[in-house]
Each structure stands twice: as structure tokens, then as C-alpha cells.
Length: 158
Length: 158
DNA sequence: TATTGTTATACTCTATAACTATA
DNA sequence: TATAGTTATAGAGTATAACAATA
Image 1 (tube, chains in turn brown, cyan, red, orange):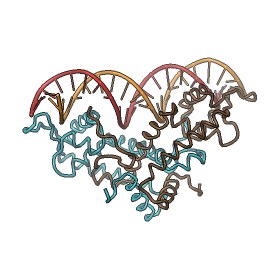
Image 2 (cartoon, protein in one colour; image 1 turned 90 degrees about the horizontal axis):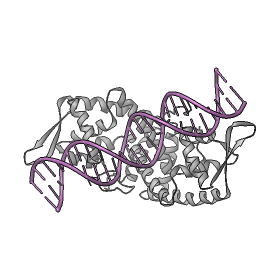
Image 3 (spheres, protein in one colour; image 1 turned 60 degrees about the vertical axis):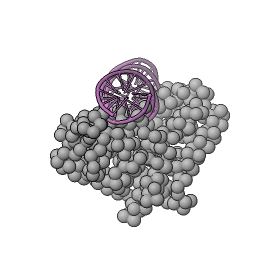
Image 4 (cartoon, helix red, strand yellow; image 1 turned 45 degrees about the vertical axis):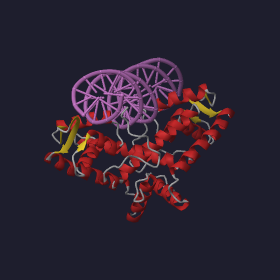
């Protein structure tokens, strides 16, 4: 086994060259990957996956959604969403039913079980965020979050 | 074709639910992915790949490296590095030669052509960073970078 | 003809295991 | 036996194309 030692979320690699550490894009890519790995592991432990939480969160926003609007809200391809919904439906967390007004559409809704599961998964996300941000002060966490929102074009201005 | 519209780096998705935008880990994952995509496209245009730059940057640090030290510096698995080095060697950007003192080891060095290529690829990375950080003021860019280094455990304290 | 959901396929990045040649 | 590099394989995540049903 030749893999490098597993890194905690606060340690993205042994010691990359300064030239790479100077690049914000490089840091974002490394940290983003670490977040993904951590999320996969944490959700895997409870028989779920990160995108399960994302979809449940979209459905919890209010009105029933079609698969297309869910996919667009998450920036997912619609074909990828199919499998995610299959898994959620099998666990009875969501329901699909044809839209009578347009029978091409599936209206997807959260079940009561799904609402409870969402609360559970929300706690997982909160733990991940807390661990991720542990090296920062509370003020620094807010600053970082606001800057990331701005870079993502998802701040209030948009 | 059902894919959502391609997002600029400053736009990670249509409009994810607030619950997800509240998570710093979620933002990092989305932005990290966007950085990866952008880097892949930009390097692809010149017949290279993001990890080519990473390896060249490691080799440019000074002493000749073995494949193991390169992999560790980048947090890559050694088996994955093999293919990357094959590509770099084919383009004559790096050289592998057996270590006479321990014939299991390959000493990897940057060629003069590799040094020139590194300069070219460095410009690509700088462009990517500039585009990524366009929504931020210069001061905000520095702040973001410092905070990311801290979260990654790669700041001065480490 | 266009759109929704679906299936099938392929590609990137990474991890794992097994192999070889050296030590 | 242990290590460096290599090969082969598999998995997650995503993108693309083509298809059936419906509009």
C-alpha cells in the first residue's frame, strides 16, 4: 500500500511547493476535494450520500419541484439526478408522481420520513463545517464564508 | 442535451437552497470543482493537464526528487504519478534516471524545456486565479487566501 | 418539433491490490 | 522482509448522447 497518510481536513497535503500554495484556485481545489471526501465518508456511515442532503434541502424549500427544477437548483445534470431520486424514493424519503397537467413531468415531494431524515443529515453537515473551520476564529469563519459566497456569485448582490 | 448552462467560475449553480449556501464546506466543494474544471480546460488547450504543472513546480524547487517524494509533496498516490510522469517524459519536460545508490529509485529532474514549459503553465495558473478572484478587491483576495491557507493547515504556523 | 425523464456510455480523479526489481 | 516503482482494476462524480413518452 503506497498511499500517502490520510490527511485531516485541516491538512491538504504533505507540503506542496510554494508556487502551488500561492494559488488560491489550487487551495480551493484541494480543500474542496477534502470536503467532498469528508462528506462522502460521514454520509456513508448513515447509509446516505451528500447529494441526498442536497436534494432533501431543495425539496424542503416549499413548493413541489419537478426533477428539472431540482437538477437546475443544484447544478446537476438531470440524468444524474435520476439515480439519486431512485435511492431517496426507495428509502421512502421522497415521492415521485406524474404531474396531471403535464404528464412528462414528475412532481417530487418530501415525505414526513424525509423531513426527519433531513434533520439528521443537517446535523452531519453542521459537524463537517465545524470541523472544517476549527482552525479559524468565529469572526474569521464569517469572513471566509462571505468571501466564498462573493466568489461564487451567490452573495446578496446577485 | 439536458445539462444546465455552463457556469462562469463566479457562478457555481443556478440557485441552491439557502440551507446549502449556509454551509462553508458546500461552498468549498462547489468552488473547488469549478476550479478543477476551469484548470482542466485551460491546460487542455495547450496539451497539458493541471497535474503537469504541479509536478513541474515540485521539481523546480531544487534538489532532484524521487517519485515517492513528488507524490508525497502533492498528496498523490504513487501509482497515479506514474502516468503523469510518463506524459511529462514523453514531452521531454522531465527526465527519469535510476539512482545508482539505490536502483529501485528513479531520480526525476526538470529539463531546460521543462523549465520553459513551467513558465508558460505558471501564466495559465495566474490567469485562472485572476478570473476566479475577479469579484473581490485586492485586500479581500489576500484575506481569502490567508484564511484558506489557515484552514488547510498550511499557514506559517505549520 | 421540443421537452421531461430515462438509459447507456465515457471520462477524470482517486484508491486499492498485486506484481517486479531491487534492497 | 521491506521498499520503489509499476500495472491493473474499480469506484465516485460528472458529462454527453440517444431514446420513449408526452406536449
